[in-house]
Length: 149
Image 1 (cartoon, one colour):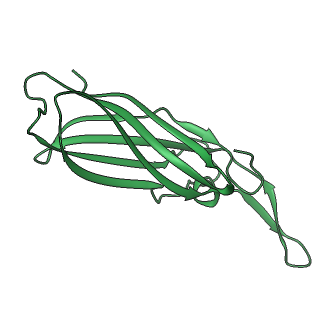
Image 2 (tube, helix red, strand yellow; image 1 turned 45 degrees about the vertical axis):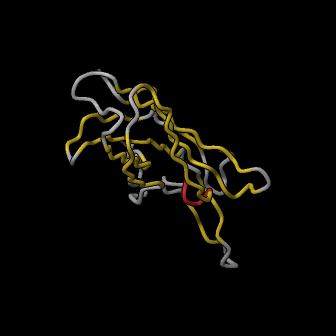
């Protein structure tokens, strides 16, 4: 049985701050069967949100994770909804290199805005042994200077 169910990623604009976004990864942790965490088991959750390298891209995307978090907590038998979030700037979400030029006055101008593709990965482990892994669906947007989310 999969213990990570319904993995999702969402990127939303923060109210009152058009330059910042909230990345949220959520999923249901379902535990009930044998060899699954119970009410007294410590589990480690690792969530990493990063760019997706698309075949045929002009340049590779940024390699720095947008969100990387690892925490240990006591699992509760049953279904628990988990949410992990971080606040980032639009510049951080602009993971696919865009094309720019410099005019005669030295000002930088955007030429082409490439779509940015981002995914979240979740891993649950007990005592260092991975018991389940899942990926969210890929989310795409255009967060660069010429983009409109």
